[in-house]
Length: 366
Image 1 (cartoon, rainbow, N blue to C red):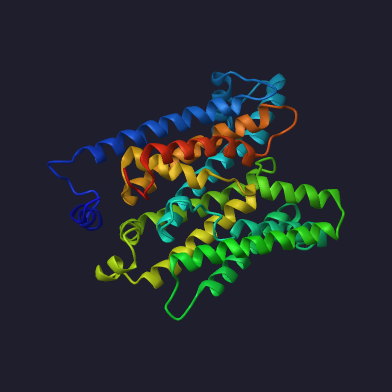
Image 2: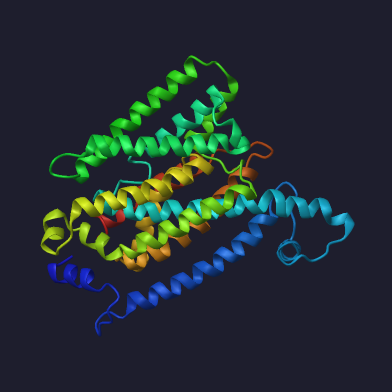
């Protein structure tokens, strides 16, 4: 990438140019395709499972639920499977996929590291400690079935605060200090979680640890969807409003300062936003690896490196991807359920290695 290209990208990533009209057209076509694919995927995947229901019937049940329509008495059981069990789970998968992809894009720019993902700052490990602590100690009982999720979110926020305080110095926050601090603190939180499990030989605590460390949508409910959806929506909008700033950060602190960007203030703001969204995602699904790492790179291949475009396409791609990953999770070895992290790792590792060999791998490069 030449200096002149970088300046054009920062000033106006969507400015029309006679020599390069293709990215905007390609982005629009990609968004339209992903929206259609997401809608079709939701209907198809909701109907699939141990009890398979044709897409037409699934769409009819969903329409009846949304409009207050009537169904026959002999269809009540099937309707309950569709609306009360599968629909919230599949929607949560789409929400988490969108959130992790968007945060992955921002984190990679925030720390200027192509290997960064939403969990690199220790948020997921802190959430695991919070979830296991609530399970063992029985705290937050007033929240009922949401107690563990609330504990996970509080643990995630505590971890984010500790990482920020540890990484902060008189010169502000540098990408390297932030990454190293997040990685080290993550190991510390994992050790703390192991100690809690070790001194509390309870099968429930062990199961909770596995859930938060490998991910699952098995606990999805209608009650938990609004908060997760609102968090991802607000976080995505805020990150998109910072898209030009994210473009600048990828060129380094010196270039950012020369263009009038206060890197310390911007990183602090982006750190808070990404931590909140990541904490909310981990609280409802556990830690799902590789989504926020691989999807941003795949999207950049299609629409280019401009965050104005990537932050529109990546959430849609992540939503579609997680919907199908969840289907594999709950059907491949039914009636047992595979952890989401196992499936995303089996897909993500070879894909990322292929990307490295194909592109030689520079952040946002070609």
